[in-house]
Image (cartoon, rainbow, N blue to C red; front, side, top):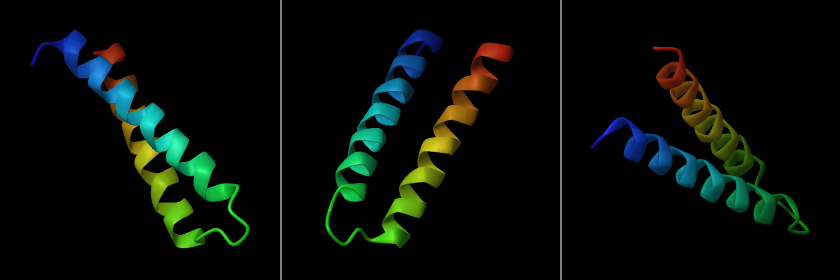
Length: 55
């Protein structure tokens, strides 16, 4: 997988997680452990995207 394709895949995954996070947070009783896990995954992807642009 090329650098551009990898970046696009990571950006798509980031958006997918962002949507899942939005949906979970707007529920009447959100699962806060799931919210925490989604935020952690989102940050991990953001960090990887940053590393790819720096190197």
